[in-house]
Each structure stands twice: as C-alpha cells, then as structure tokens.
Image (cartoon, rainbow, N blue to C red; front, side, top):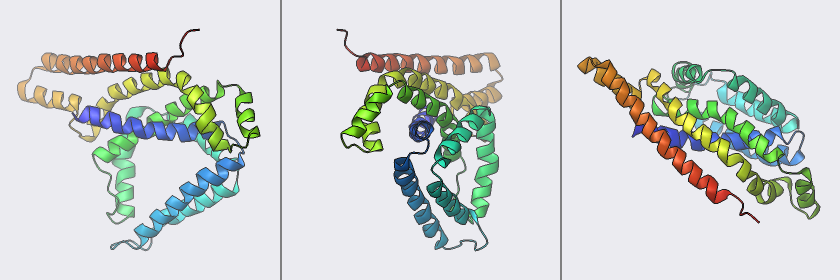
Length: 257
C-alpha cells in the first residue's frame, strides 16, 4: 500500500534529519561537529555537483551547485553556523503547516529543480511526497532527539571525553544508547502522526488511501460510505502501529530493581 510505503521511507529519512539537527542543536561551537559532519556533508555536495556538471544536457548558466559549495565552505569556517542553521530549520519548519510544505515541495521546489538541472533532477510524484513529509517531520524529531540527549547528565559526556573518546564516539556509544529510552515514546507518536498526515499527499495527485476513496466516491456518488471506509482504514493502521510502538517501548524499558 502506497500510504505505508511513503510513511516508512519518509519516517526513516526524518529520523536521520532529526538526529543530525538534534545533535547540531546541542553541539554549538563543537570543533568535532564542524570537522566531521560538515566536512563529510560538504564533500558529498561537491562530488554530487561535479557529477551533475558533467552530465549531458547540463545548463551552463545554473548556479545551484556553486551555491551549495559556497554554503558548505561557510559552514566549515564558522563553528556556530550548525547551531544557527538547526535552530532556524526547527523554528521555521515547525511554524509552517504540513499541507503547505507538501504543496510547496510538489509545485514549487520540484519544478525549480527540474528546470534548473535541465531535467536531470526530477522529483515529481512519490519523491516529492517523501521529501516533503520527511523535511516537515525532521524538525519535530530534531527537538525529540535534542530533549533526549539533554536528559542525560552532562557528566556522562565529560567522563567519555576524559577516557579519550571523540565527541561523536561519546555520542554514539554513551549518550544515545541511554537517550533512546527517552526518545522512543515521542518518536512512536510522531510515526503515527506521520501515517495520518500521509493523507495530505493526495493534494499532489498520489493515489494513497484518501485519494482512492475520493475516486471511488466520484464513481459511485456515495460519500458517506467512501469516507467511512477511509476513516476505518486509517483507524486500523494507527491502532496496529500503536500496539507495535508500545511493544517496542516495553522491550526498551529498564528492568525494575
């Protein structure tokens, strides 16, 4: 089913975005963050730009990839930039309705990228829906990860650094394994919320559950039965996911002493 497929892929991408921006939110000015994260991301952007530049049909007047390279260089030179960028991302995206984000991705960003790259980068349809949902929920998950990381006493990080761990080693092996128990409940809630918000991708003409229901209604002129069926399908999916999330949470709980 398209609804479940979109939700699973978009949520996986949103978790990655949330983790990256969540760490950026709690790592203001960290030289490790500047060196490892931005340098690696920057190299990826540069290589992608070079590969796109030699692609047949590339438009010579396009400045998109040059802008990406300049932005990455700025991030690398300014240690505080990751925190500033993550804060702007979280505050701005959380203030925009999910429907607007999906519409903007489907009818503004996608055509601009397609025209700017000479058709080499076409995100119409399913990719636009996945990116829109992931981009929107990434901001919420960034706050979830930030809160989970900050719930761990700061002494844990200091102890890990004192025995020779780098910042990211300490985050990976010490902080995040403890924070995951705090992160799991809101993470599960956002997963269920994303499943329900996946109905919004019908506005860019993707045949998910709501769109299929509308098509059935347009053929049979029975709106009551059609929307009731859509409602029941979403209810069944969310209830099953709720049971799955609760099971995972119980497995992650610390045993009682």
